[in-house]
Image (cartoon, rainbow, N blue to C red; front, side):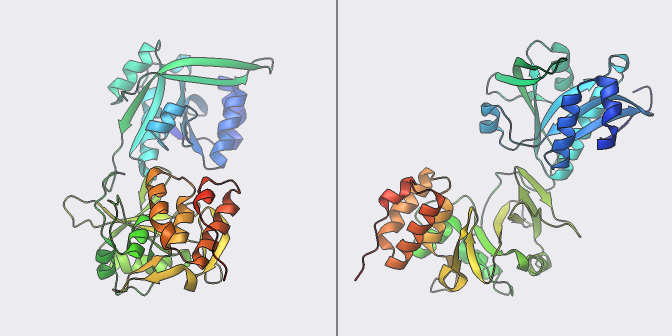
Length: 375
């Protein structure tokens, strides 16, 4: 870059200047609104007080179905442009690197973009910057935006989809070698925070046997107890990461978990290799009641929500685990339903039916849940 150019986040007050330089008022207004909502970031390259380039980091789910399937919650470089009089000066590269550095700081492990099949110059640029084809074929990209007269204009592009890995502090998203509930109980026995095993492992603790392989270990605490939980875990040498929508951010001193999400992953930096050991759910409990994370009106006193094994491992009651699983109804969730249903007492069946009906009066699982017998 032969002249000093400053790349920084755009601000709402800069909208008139951006529109004067590039036009596209609809685009800039839309992206600034999305940025204010925490959905992405608009970066602008400035030569003094003159905007000479811009790029948007899209951090919502992609509109394109193949991208949602293969790269869920992967941030995307969108609408990279450099003013014609400032091209071939390294500004495009500087804008791309700014988005990458920002995404890496937020905890994302990769970044992606689409480039039109006939935009050979852009494809060469991204290849030089370390991007490679995702190997899932071409992607059709369609969108509408207002034309010069305000009427909507439809656009269609066929794109190569490119991906680049970003430097990360901790293990990758899939690098799990989870503790068993018994191992977690042994390691956490001196914690003063009440915690219990959730999700699939809770089903197996209830049944008294392991019924399938588990990718991870999920435990749950009251979000209000997180400061004490964190203090104890860090005193034992563990590192904690805020896990949210495809990203993992190390919780350093003074950092707090994103209040919009509810998972914190744990690893032991002394391991070789370092892998994820446990996922903590941060639950919103009101008045000592458990509530379903996606059905907040379904509430149960904690005294009725938790059981323990003979060895003292606390776990969430199976009918409440099933309510959490009822959001997705994956094959493993259907299997858990079939295993658990014959073992539930009348009170548990009532809780399960009530929760499923609250979710959807026509929920597919309701047909399999017998009505409790009345004496």
